[in-house]
Structures are given as C-alpha cells and as structure tokens.
Length: 476
View (tube, rainbow, N blue to C red):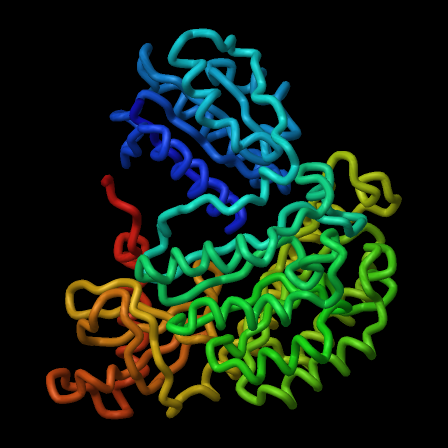
C-alpha cells in the first residue's frame, strides 16, 4: 500500500508521524510525497486549541473532497482522540480514526481498510500505554535535526490545558530506548537532537526516578559522543534543578538554550492558571541559569486574555517580559478548551481585548528580541545550514530552535546539513545576518553602511523561499 502522511501541530506530532511512517515501511508499505499518489492518506491532526482544530477540520475536508474512490482517508492524532464524533460530522468521508492512544495500531488499521473490514465509524483500539513511548527506528524528516520524544502525556493540571485529556498521564521512555534512538539518528547523519515532552524536566518520575533529566543528558552524550548539538525544550520552571543547570553548563554538546514555558508573569494570574506562581523564584532561577551559562538563550511562552486577567495584570506581564528580557517568546491568545477548569471560570475576556493584548505583547517582545539579537553582532557562531539556493544560505545557531525561532541568513552557499563557522554582522527582530567565514575569499560582503539593506533583502528572500529550502524526506 502507498501511504501519504501529513502532520499538523507540534513537534510531538512530528515524532509520532515519523514512527508511524517507520512502522508502515517495516510492514512493507511505501511512503509517497503526494496525496494523489497514495492508497491511504493519513492526517496527523492537532486538537490543542480551537484554531488548531479548525485547521485540522479544514485539511480533512479538503482531502476528503479530492480523494479518489480507491483511496482511504485516516484522521490520526489529537483531534481524532477527542473529537471523533465531530470529525464524522464535519468530514463524513473520513474512513477511519486513530488517536494519540492508538497510533501503534496504524499498520493493522490500514491493512483492515485494504481488506474492507473497517467501517467508516471504526476507531482503532487503544494500545498498551507503554507502546506509546516505545522507540521505533525512524528516519529524520528535518535533515540534520531530529526531535526525540522522551515522554508523552502529562501529570500537571494547569487550568487552561487539555493535554492530559488528550494524551493521558505521563509515560517516560526508558534510558536505553532514548539512547538507542539517538545513536540511530546520529549514525544516519543527524547533527542536532531536540529533546521534547510535555514536561522534559519531569522525565522519569513515572519510572520511580528523581531528577533524571541530567542523567539522561549524560547518557545521551556518552552513547553518541559525535553528536554536535543536544537541545532541551519544554522545561517546567519548578523542575529545573541545580544538577540540571550544572549538567547543561558542563557538557559541551548541550546547547546553551532553554525553553521555559512560564505562561504568565503575574502571580495572581498564575495562581488561577494552577501554575507555579512564586515570581521571585523565577527571577532567582533565571539568575542562576545566566550565571552558569552567560551566553544562554532563553525562550518562554505566555498566554494573554486568561479569564479574569485585568489590565493591571496584563501590564504586569509586559513589565516582567521587559525585566527578564527573554531572547525568544511565543505569545498565545487564550482559548477556552472544553473540559478544562478555565473554560468554566467567570470573567471570560472578550475576543477583541485578547487580540489587542496579544498585539501589544508581541510588539513589546519585538523590541526586546531586536535588542538581544543586536547584542550578537560581531560574535562568531557555528551555523547549522538547513537551506541553500540562489546564492543564499539559511541556517540556525545554537540560539535558535528549529521551526519556532528565527533563522541565520548569509550570502553564499555553504554545504547543506553541515555546521560551519560564521560571523554575525546584522540583526533583525527575529533573524540574524551572517558572513560565512569559510567563504570570505569567494563572497564579497558589503561595507557596514550597506549591511542593513542586505539584511532586509535577505529577510524578503527568506520569506519567499525558506520553506522550499527546508530539507524534507524524499521517497525511498
């Protein structure tokens, strides 16, 4: 059977799609890169917030409208886990549903479809919960970078979040499974491993381990010493220990980059969110992180418009952002999610107010990001090259995580998938412009007065071409 998989949503979905793809290939099925060539079309959906759900429904309807009579359409992932009935209503031509608790059954589901033993109302049965975090040999689809999911599910009870309803309780992948997966990816040419989970710093607690992430980092580096970059995402602030800080500072492969999704900067809002609300401890944590790693790049995410958020509380968030000066920030408009505590709270904020606060928060962070990026001008940084074409190289330094942060743009064509030395010469709000040091003899770089113009030109080129320059998995 020829299979096409498209992935919506977060990096954790990317990993699930890659593992489904590998299971299908191991069973003798073939992956294709266009839905029109497939016998089975699999959409790994996102159902985290309303906007993501609507995008998932739209993709399912579009594919359902264009699929041929002999094709099967499968809805997988988060939307399928929680909203199967709604999928049947909005996209009745979907042939089968397989949720986040069932993806290891993808082979048997498709083979049942091929035998016409599955009715359109069927849902794949849930797998053994440990199957959901097993290590499946897989091929990276992001070129020289790969996500490794070290746990799935979540034991936190944040008032706004539906993830525990979608993913269930936390399940950590054993050490040996993680290190084996990393070894396989590095042997296949991956230069950067990005560790992900709902809360990476809670890794191992369900296995009876305490503060296990530092030990996992050391185990990964020991198993794959040739790995260039090891990046940690989604660290819960109260779970970042002194051992973790010191381990990150000591291991040269670990990027001096940390994602701390704080969600707000005002204690009363955090308390209503059922998040850690000791703001002074956050200041202390960030001070210790920056003391141990002076070149640390910090990322966070914030929610604006949470129920009851007053103008003073929102201004408190902006003040917090300015004082901490995060290098990267994602700002999300609050979305009331069915089944969460926050959805039933009083004082829901009007959509117009939420949109206005979102814009103000983004503008505040743009000023901060520009200042933080300008501080990089003159630094020599290694750059992982992810795209090359028409005299332009596009990549990232350790300061930029894949897909969510900005890029480093440089004139000249460096080796694709390699890490090369570069000097930062100009800065935008999100992107940096660099000179590729190994190409200095062959590329004429403008004088300083022209560099800002080049930065704008390269940014326009990036907007037009960066998606096409990204490395994608081709058919075997």
